[in-house]
Amino acid sequence: MSSFGQQRRSESAHPIRVSFEFFPPKTEEMEDRLWETVTRLAPLNPAFVSVTYGAGGSTRERTNKTIARIIKETSITPAAHLTCVDATKEEVNSIVRSFASLGVTRFVALRGDPASGIGEVYQPTPGGYQNGADLVAGLKSIANFDISVSAYPEKHPESPDFATDIEMLRRKVDNGATRAITQFFFDNDLYERYVERVRRAGIYIPIIPGVLPIHNFKQVANFSKRAGTRIPAWLADRFDGLENDPQTHMLVSAALAAEQVNDLIERGVNDFHFYTMNRSDLAFAICHLLGVRAPVAA
Image (cartoon, rainbow, N blue to C red; front, side, top):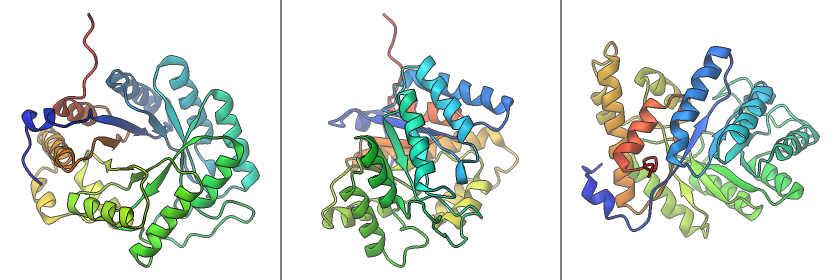
């Protein structure tokens, strides 16, 4: 990735737009930390924030509570995650209507990982939506929602090839998807080649890069292996020896993510989705480096 600087960033013809992903808290302590994160990032005026939930709706009640609080206490637009895992169509549709009654108009529609974990064989739920494209169609049959879907610059681990992967994306778009948000990646060339493949296939919705600030390199490396995301050798080298130096680890992480995003800006990208891990420190620092800041009070 190329070096970066304020001059190059300011030359971008379009403003940078950001969105953030949170997951629902499991404990009161985690709820406090999440809300500190939301409060810290809200002034950056994100395009939206998404809130995940677990397989089979295992965190559905907390997701509902988190979204309700975001709507009530902030001006942020929330997007609720939905998956096809361990739920019938009727159950999913009931969840959708429940979110809609709160004022939710945006959804992130995903097939979801198997309830047994990433890397296991996915089995569609009897009577449920079969995949992400099927779920998008179901959402659109309820109302004209704004729907984000997933995309995979290194292809989905279960896809035999890119052609199959992109055909699934086409089906999602044909059924009404508004945009795609990518799995996180660390090689911008892979993202650029993926977008070129998608455009050649006649798909023109925005493909927003998902950016993962690295709070813990060892954890990210382990998860990346299961998710099919390549860790470049140069990236591993940047974190070598920092296992017991969290302060330097955080500084390196912020610099690397800002470098990645600035390189993408040079390639014509203006929208970015940050996987926050419910922590504001790195996401806020990266946005500051990019010039995404809260308005200054008059």
